[in-house]
Image (cartoon, rainbow, N blue to C red; front, side, top):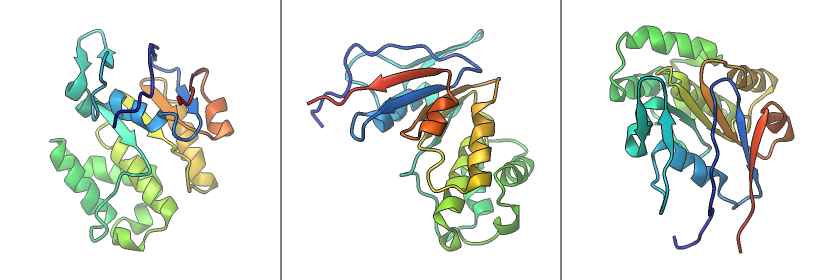
Length: 192
């Protein structure tokens, strides 16, 4: 729309130092993550990923990012394995079946991997979103309310992701426990 969410917003995120994006509902946390993922383009400025070997911005960011958000939907008629196979094919992953099996185990869905997603609880759907984000082993993980609807083992999985020292992790959250796991924070103020 025509609503300004941020102005003069600038920050760096470093490998192994999770960053929490904080702010009231409607302050732009989810929108900021979409910009960082390359899904949305800002009206001005840019999100840029710089590594020793490359620089990427805009839509170039998308394949380098694993993204989890409550609004991300999987195909209900497909199984978890089929949803992940679709994502693996779209991302042109080699060794798809191994990557899928590994990530299904990692997120705790192995016993239900061949059940239709329509039979999943909201917490299981969140685990599947996490699996989709982790599937291609991206250097950047953007997590929008990652612990929402998760049980204690699911929240422990999110904690493990926060502790990854070999990637950039950015989390948009209003959960104090998630924010406390992040040594750095950006707080968005709601504009009028």
